Length: 279
Ligand SMILES: Nc1ncnc2c1ncn2[C@@H]1O[C@H](COP(=O)(O)OP(=O)(O)OP(=O)(O)O)[C@@H](O)[C@H]1O
Ligand SMILES: [Mg+2]
Image (cartoon, rainbow, N blue to C red; front, side, top):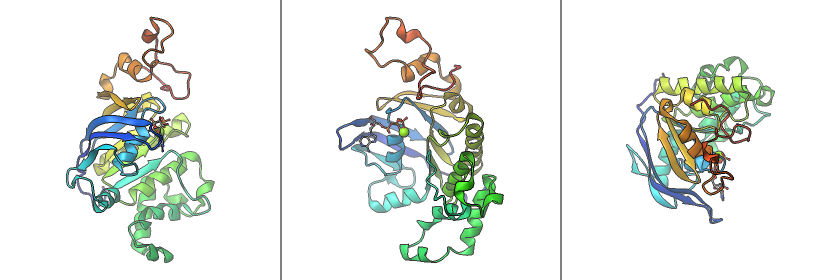
């Protein structure tokens, strides 16, 4: 556990909706509260609004209605409050957003650049920061690779660098958007297990979008299912039913070609269908 460990506060999306400039309503008014130290997985078909919800929780996308609140900040409205929230929020992406020609260590240190004024980035970060980055790499099992170029690592290793870069800022909340989508099943499980174990050890509140239902059930302590911008499932993983998965991934209302179509298994052969359904 990090020496700077502080308990995570709860995070709240209160009646949040998002309408993009294009007119697309990506999120209908939704209220979701994320408890300290919880590991929530967002499920749902492509276009359901998972990334939008994650972005709104970080202020990358403004809520059209409603607001985001945090226990210690209250409703987050001002630029200063958003800065404070983001300082405590680590982000992990599907595309790792690493700079391939830089070393693994330098990529992890990029997670700390935001903590300094822009002019300060002209100099190497202090030794304490380098040690902090090495500690983060050790936690994801990549200490030995610190000096390798990032583009020489496997996809799974690169994703772990992405996790280390998020950890180096010692966040209290971790938002991860399809963090293992580009990995083979074994690497995906390994990377997610590591992320999960670190979140547990540090008491981080994690909100992770996934397309793999089996992994979601294995690691989540709460499943939130979105469909067409609405929360249609919110349950403990052990309580998820085949019906709930149909509600999430089955044919959209009015599109069933046969009257009994809704009673079929959820599709498994499309890109965005759950990879394993065994409710
Ligand atoms: N920047 C944007 N501008 C306009 N519309 C957008 C934007 N980003 C997303 N959308 C639309 O908002 C809806 C929700 O998209 P979002 O990316 O949140 O879904 P998702 O559940 O993350 O999908 P996926 O599983 O494919 O990543 C979709 O209809 C999408 O086309
Ligand atoms: Mg997405």
